Image (cartoon, rainbow, N blue to C red):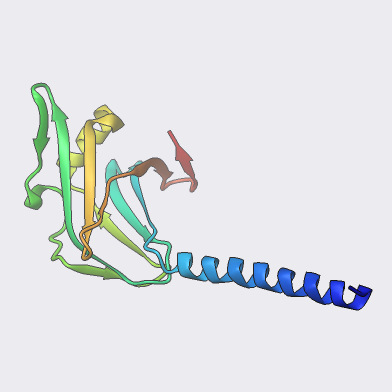
Length: 148
């Protein structure tokens, strides 16, 4: 093989590898990626749930459930006691957007005692359950977010 034929072969392999990598990246970008944060707002003494849609697809939330750890074990919180305002599900979150839900005083009080005292699950329209969240402290007076 001549030098020209070798370069053509290398260039064809390089193009095929790059094309495959970009194709896989594009397919993975349409997967549903949700991140959840429970933010406790200092100086306001309340908590909120932030559901962040990090994908190119719209996500429809059909249910949110919350359990609080009491002295005798985990207790399912009634739907009417989870949020500070009445939330009607399903709720759609557009791509690269977020949903902010203020939590009730009962849940906020449980968070002040211990951030490990609650379990939260969010279910989307495909039946996928999201339960991992990050607890953050939001300083409303001076600004800033810190992980505790």
